[in-house]
Length: 112
Length: 113
Image (cartoon, rainbow over all chains, first blue to last red; front, side):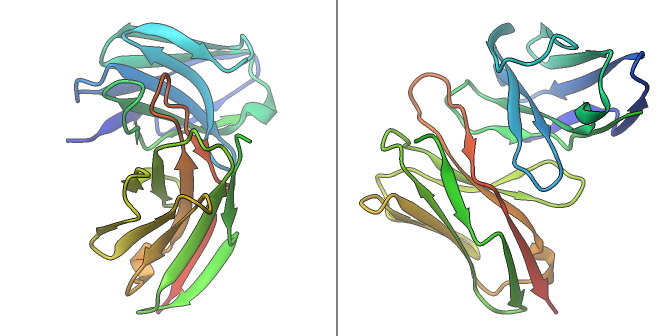
């Protein structure tokens, strides 16, 4: 089973709201990732967690706050977003950081 | 040097034809080359991947050809079907340290019935 699940599928939020995106995998993977994808563009890496520790932050604004409560779960907390943050947010996981990455279906985020 | 150049940007192929998407890279330290398939509104799905120790890898109708000296690799989709219509991304990474994927710009494939 190579399934990564993400909730919610769609999210509309105002610029003053606080919301969270969730990602879950039960493949025993120890690396998890957040990507942002704009229309007709490739995914852009945001954060990498390895063994539940944040190992890479690709200079992402602080209005995005990742959290890895355990090896199966990854959250992305959102606060005071801008309309330009509207995008498809993808979670991915891999056995370790040097192995194949498997993506979830994404959360379509719209900031109004 | 971290870029992966992908062409064409879009491609229309008749059903039953061969779809060919090309990618080129500069960084000779790259040693892992996956292809992802993405349908509208969905996440990218790992399709097939190759490492430089082989020149070709085939899985069903999908084949990766790899030319190490030219620093190029390509995806061939044989007997293309309308269900193959999607965006395809090539990518490259290094297997040492963190495997950051460097994606190509994507190719939108349309297979006409």
